Structures are given as structure tokens and as C-alpha cells.
Image 1 (cartoon, helix red, strand yellow):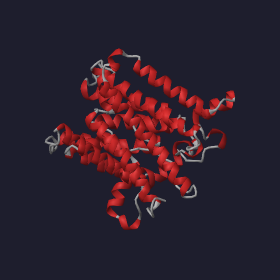
Image 2 (cartoon, rainbow, N blue to C red):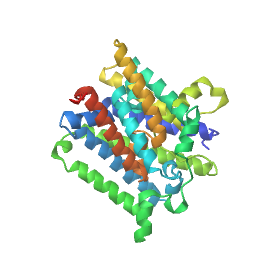
Image 3 (spheres, rainbow, N blue to C red):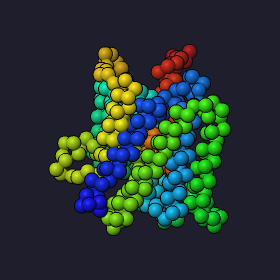
Image 4 (cartoon, rainbow, N blue to C red):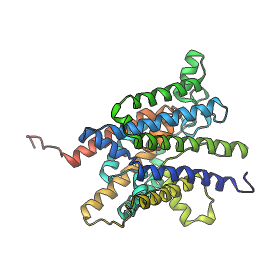
Length: 354
């Protein structure tokens, strides 16, 4: 590929550059899913939720621009290659959202906080990564496969919602994707308060471009490597487990996009924390808090594998190619997080008959 650089190392470099931008967005732009949901539900402030919508809109517009230019095949995108299971999407999304509320962060957010010196997030990263691997290929894998078997997507359904509209109307899928992405960006910018928040607009756009760069880079490497490599973008559940495994057994397997993405977020978050002067070592002083975070991270790992992605994986990357699963998982994550936040912040009253 590039001056003798292997495909795996090149993918890691591409993932690392995009991950670095994501890490900066988390630390400098306060890009955080749980924070956005909490602001909306309890602070009556939807600016960070609009920031998320901005990221999706920019990622979608750019990704379908790649499709229109012939640089990305929707059918090869990882989220479109597996037949969609709605039940797994809903259940996985609910579990992930609830676990995220208990842990206080998703996998991406935990990496960003770890880059700022938060050792509590180190525990979340480890438990989430191991839990995801246990569910994907460890002791729980046989249960998952029996209940939710994975099958290749049928050719006629492999292009997601954009392909569905193309078959229904005869118009190109790329046109639908670009139009929908631009419409979403316009909707986000329709808020005067959001327009007065250039930081959110800029960093939301950076997240969208980082996700699109993952599709562009992995598709380019796949084409140069005879189409054998996966076409993917950023996600932070199973890749955490892959990164842990690589750190332990680097000689047994080479680098990939996943490791580059994870290390890139850590580096970007570290740089962002230094810029803001926020880097400091923090540890957990309350055993009950640590117990809740460990439980939440374990539940997140299971949910992410069932849902085939996390807040970034399904919430932005899969959304950017209009995968069938994306809106269902995203809404399920929000519902699970809302339930978990209510339990933690407000609590649930005991019924009178108990």
C-alpha cells in the first residue's frame, strides 16, 4: 500500500487520525452522549443533543458523497453486511443505555476521560472490553448465537434505508443520503441558540468528518488489498476488547483499525486535556460507586454486542450509511439511559402494596 506499510498498519493509522479528532471533540467540544441526554432530560437544554444530530448529518452527507463518487459501496459497510435483527437491536440498545447510565459513561466517553487522567474510566474500559469479548466470542457467545443467530444480509437489503428508497423510486441511493444528511444539518442549525454556539457546531462537524474518514480510509485499503479487508468506521465496544488483546498478544496478531481508533481517542483526549489545563489524576473513593461502574460496564459490553454497536458505532457510524439498525438502536440506547438516569437521580417510589 503506502511505501510498504502493511494494510493493518495503514488501517491503524487511518483509525488513529480519526480517533485523535474524536478525542479532541470529547475534551474540547464536550461531545458526550450521556451528557447530552442528561442535559436534555434534567437541564432542559438540547444543545448537546443537537451537536449529536450535527455529527450524524455531516457524517451522512459526507459518507453518501463518497458513495456518489464511487469510493464507498454501501453493501460492503460492516453494518449492512449482517441481516438486521430488530429484537437484538432493541434489547441490546436498552441494555447498553442502562449500563451507560450506571457506569456514568459509554466506551468512547470512558476513553476520553481516561485520556484526562480519570482512573475510574480505566476500570470501565477494561470491564467493557472484556465483557464485549465474552459475549462476542467467549463463554456467552453460544447463547447469543442460538438466540440471535447472525446471517449475511440478503443482497436486496444490503444497502439499508437508502437502498430501500432506491428500489422503491428508482432514484439513486446516494442522492437520498446526501439530501437527508443536509436536511438534518439544516434542522440542527434552525435553532438560534445552537447557531450562537459555534463550538458545538464545529466539534459536531469534526465528529461527523472523523466517522466519514473511517469509511473512506477503510474502503480505500480494502480496494487496494483486493477487497479482503472490512469496510468500517469508529465504534468503541468490541474494539476495546480487541485493543486489550492486542496489547497482550501483539506478536500473535497485527494492528487494525480498531486499535488505531482506540489509541487515537486516548491521544486526542490527552492532548485536549492539556490544552484546557484539565489533566489530573482521579480515582474512585466510594466502593459503591466503583461497584455500580463495574456493573454498568459489564451490561454495556453485552448490550453493545447484541446491538452490533455503541453510541458512536450505531449512533453515528451506522447512521451515516443509513443502516436499518441505526435509528432503532439509537432510540433504544436513549430509552435505556433515560431509565437508568431516572433510577440514579430521582429514584423509583415503592408501590404502596409492597
